[in-house]
Image (cartoon, rainbow, N blue to C red):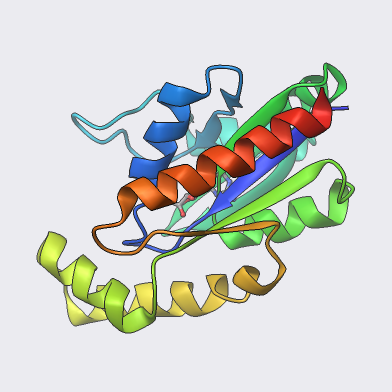
Length: 190
Ligand code: 5GP
């Protein structure tokens, strides 16, 4: 039996940089696609997504094809049940980044042995706020939304299988923690 690794990381936690590190350094871990109704972002890395119309998404949802799905920022996001099931029964380690409504659903469905929760900790809300403001202009309203999301995500730090510390200027340390964690997960399935 394989394992599904779910990566949770608040906005500004450096999650996407760490996921690129995993993709480059762990070719034996495959990244599961997300089904979504959101628009493609120009120039962005779109390979993690299967873009669907709302009708197509709702059709899949009604056909029970999603292991989990959520509405986030006005769009649908979901994970294919069949893709997870076949990866786990083939003994593979698969990884996905997800917001917490989806994580909660998956925790109800998979056994703790099938699931690994990895939480990216980049410090307090004040630290994240500072990073987000430095990255690009942001409205107070959007910032407030992100704060709510942070408050929804931070409890997972207590129960995560791995907490990766990604502090400013310490990317290499975070990568090292990820490397150790993933080696442990890969070892546990082989
Ligand atoms: P974005 O549209 O910015 O790529 O992603 C928005 C949010 O949706 C992020 O928090 C991301 O982790 C989450 N997300 C991406 N794919 C999925 C998915 O398949 N299921 C759920 N529940 N959330 C997802």
